[in-house]
Length: 313
Image (cartoon, rainbow, N blue to C red):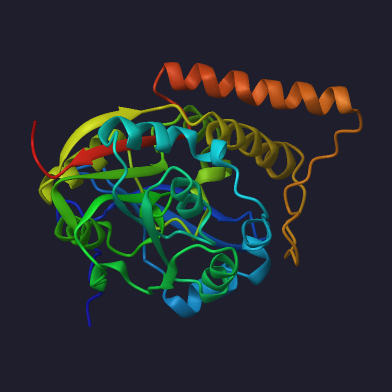
């Protein structure tokens, strides 16, 4: 039987141009994975897409320990998204956070008087959020979610890159939003300077957990194809962008320049870099922040956030 070529989730053409190949640096598994780029529209995705069984070793329990045991919710962590949300909706309404983890964002916007719900595939994270008072529920596939619609806002905070069909998720969001509802999506930026410089060592490649990679252009086209109108694209998440720049440099130094062998990790400390002096650690963080600010200005930051509405304006 002839092997079928995977089709692009955006335009339906063949995903036939290899982009980069790399292992799972985060967990320490060396089997290579390859990202392919659609020659027609430019959307990048992992091909062939791994099965749930193949992905299981790449989602060990320790991967989310810091989010589950995070303690008190820090509202400032979500300032970029909350600011965008407040501009579109000065008066709080009903919000659904898709891929909510243990509910940090749900709790944060709840403090700002939003009626916020969250859905998450991980039962362990949902249970952790429920213990903290967040209104969460388990949902294995948002494309079939039938919650208490309609919503004033839906958020995908670094979720869309993980799903098997971003198109199906966006179509479902369109159905669940009010006619003047707002969709806010934060994703890694495949156009970023870090990706161009570090290639497979780019932290936000996150092989094989990130199944899709977007640029502002490809995400705009995908949103428009399912009935959304893009209102704003922002490059202003200093925390995510600084971490991305620093961790990409770490991986390149450790596995690229120094050629250190990979090993399977049993805890969430695979990317530690020996920096003996506090002053050097401080300078390292300042370097990351400086790179992040410069790349945000040039629209080449590690991540971007897109705001879309159901109605053109």
